[in-house]
Image 1 (tube, rainbow, N blue to C red):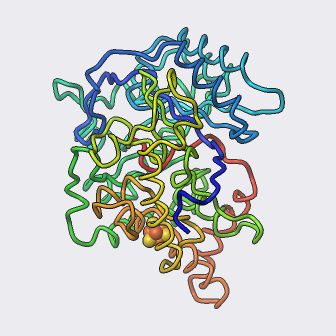
Image 2: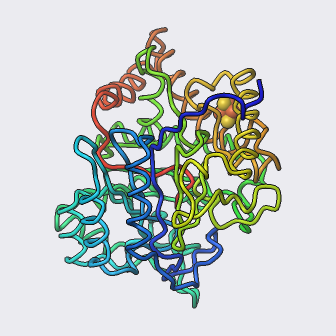
Length: 412
Ligand code: SF4
């Protein structure tokens, strides 16, 4: 049966909002096309989004709202106070809304710390490791490194007891230095860590992705980092391992849902109210075949109209074909759910494709490492003690709630 003939009941899992496209810095690997644009999302647009989402009956009883796609903290805290209060006013009884912000950390001050605590924001700070690694790519428009301001923000968060995780983009230098990266996090008291391998997205072409042996380099990095971090117990949450562990050891009757391949599973709204779905990175990119990935505007279209728009149906048809092929041929499907549409399109030229370098790194490498550690335990091999160290704490953590809300793997 063609995909569009099947009854589709959306389940909105995550709303990604672009408070502003503007970013105060200019990372060399940035994929955001309008980062010089200082426009901002009006509160009328915020209201329109949540009136429609809450009235649709399609949102989950819990909803994650991620403020991203520009540097969110260039907007004043008072903007988010008003936006969060508005969403709270519209929120139906019994629904839980969790806000998450991904920031470069340079503008964090005590006002922001109080705000993060008051609203229990799932906060992510982007820092790529020690200064000589971070400052290679994370630079101002004049090319100056941003490390000093970012680490000052992180130290203030710790001083003010605001919980946060970090995202570190691994480029060539970071990938070669797992022990130095770990030493850095431990010295700075950073406990929750996510790694994103620098990838090609939008107009950015990653040198790392073009090179040979990326998979084995990342495998070495992750294995070394994981082994050493479990020996010291200072890293509480390592997304690549702990997030995957929860997927591998879930109850049989709990299928893994991949919101990135579900229609409206991720509702992505830019500052003007333009809406896309699937991978958040699609918003703002150009594509003639899919109407620049736009399915409507929150001010003029209903969610029902967006669901049945030509662009949505074309994307859904092709993404669903890719997921079906993944399901048929990939042994990692049960922990992946069909991957990331933006990476399939960027790497393979088509949504209706399967394996990517990205999925090798995000799904295959962590799964293989975890299963190998388990094998060592079961076979009583010489390194079983190490495997036990590696797995025991994470098995305990798998049952616990995640310490904060990590963003999708592509966010930087
Ligand atoms: S790991 Fe890759 S090939 Fe396998 S299901 Fe995921 S996206 Fe598809």
